[in-house]
Length: 235
Image (cartoon, rainbow, N blue to C red):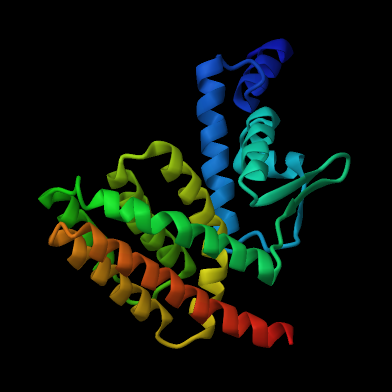
């Protein structure tokens, strides 16, 4: 039977306190993705308080990787770290959501225009496959992964990593509110697919200007469909 010290060492290793640096980095990435997924899909609600210890126990990951993941999410605007109090899931105001969408509109169309110069037939097939994804009973998780996959692919095709990383953060920050709107407005998800197909058609023609215009119209449509239901609720 293992000694108490051996058992303590094994437990410490599982918690990540004695893991090599590369392994801790991997655990941080794992915690980051798990937490972001729960935020984007609404498992963690805006305004909700979180506790690092509870998160670590839930994810079965040490507190250090969880702490580092939360710091990254804080920089991305998805959570707010309050010293000695915990972590709050960020609750953006209506004006902040509008600002995020305006920032996306200023950059994302340009990235799609650049993507038209690099897209291959394989890329086009992958984008079409993402748009055509469907399940019998759609869930928030399904919409999150579908939308993230489509926009992430477009961003990667631009081959502009700096602006791409920035836009990816903006997209994910606004995604939660897009999902709220999807569940409130009939046909919103179908309209998103139509917008994505218009972008895909422009890319298929290698028409950068048309792709840029289609993306701008997509974001303007999203802003209009999202802003009005939220404005009515806040009135």
